[in-house]
Length: 318
Image 1 (spheres, rainbow, N blue to C red):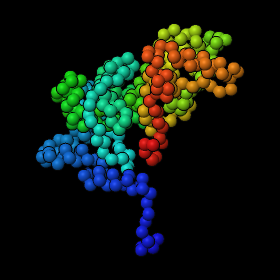
Image 2 (cartoon, rainbow, N blue to C red):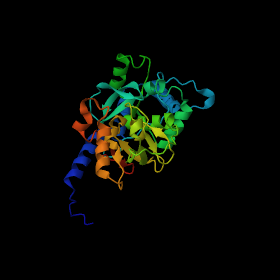
Image 3 (cartoon, rainbow, N blue to C red):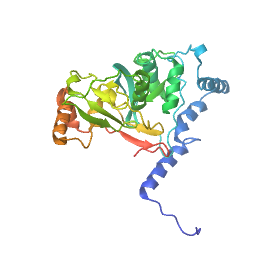
Image 4 (cartoon, helix red, strand yellow):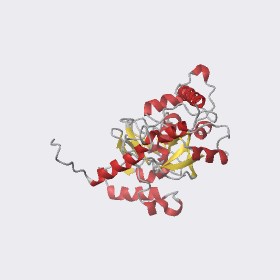
């Protein structure tokens, strides 16, 4: 390339590069290292050494012989998620809200357009019957990572009695990954259903986390969480919200999942193609989705919250 010829860049790329450069100026390692570098600059040499020792101990995965970990008093042993290249520091506010996970109310923050849940709460409620070794194993298999909350978020959790005042830090996990983790641990061995389809049954499928095909049994759908969809691969029986988390084939473990919420199962559950009388079945499908839908929320939203899939390499939000 001739040195005298100037390069022309796409305007969008110029904006991305500018935002990254602006964030990188404030950090020795780019946007993802900014908060840590800022904290270290305010610490004494002795404090830094203690900090490094603490961080080294966090990375060690506990064994079955020593499961004395208290998630309220130490950060979770999961790998810390690195922010994608070209992603500037998230400047969203740290307003605490709540979300429902497996029937439990969990504190969360909206970060980057998705809820990030308080991991210690999940470990002490939803996953209290599982060891850290079991949880770590599933996280490794699904390539689930956690981030660390910032100082403001940590103080908010302490002031609202979610964490004790002695907690040094707290892990956050996205709502999408929390659903994947809980589904693998809690619903990996569903009850089997062997009854033949009724004349009113029809085929459905979803495209979340690797896709899955099933058979909807209308006569079983008698309450919101009724198990009424049978997986065609394992004959497991699931409620609609659990079926959209279920998959057998390509689990898409190396895919960046963003924006999933099983409460929006009506947007994810689809009518299978190539069925006789598909128009009538589509009406039956809409009737099924309208049941147990207080306030017709699905009708108003129609598509629910967006569920995006972006490959990890490169992991850039669309």
